[in-house]
Length: 66
Image 1 (cartoon, rainbow, N blue to C red):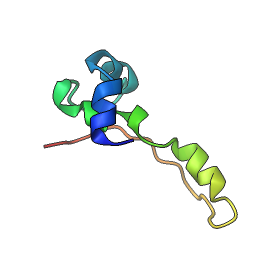
Image 2 (image 1 turned 135 degrees about the vertical axis):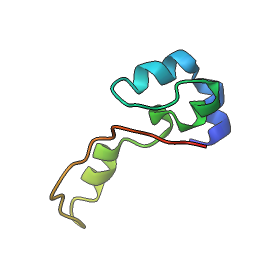
Image 3 (image 1 turned 180 degrees about the vertical axis):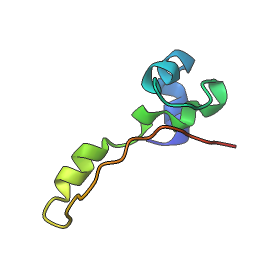
């Protein structure tokens, strides 16, 4: 979704909830980068399964913005 749509749909408490276990800013200034604003990576990769092989899966542990 667009940054503006994310800012309208989510709030700071959503950011805190969706980024549990990730070291990152958790304030109004990063609402547009909330994980819920992005497509689900597992679904995206499943839709591409005939085009690619997944040798490893990575987990985000830090996010730096600004």
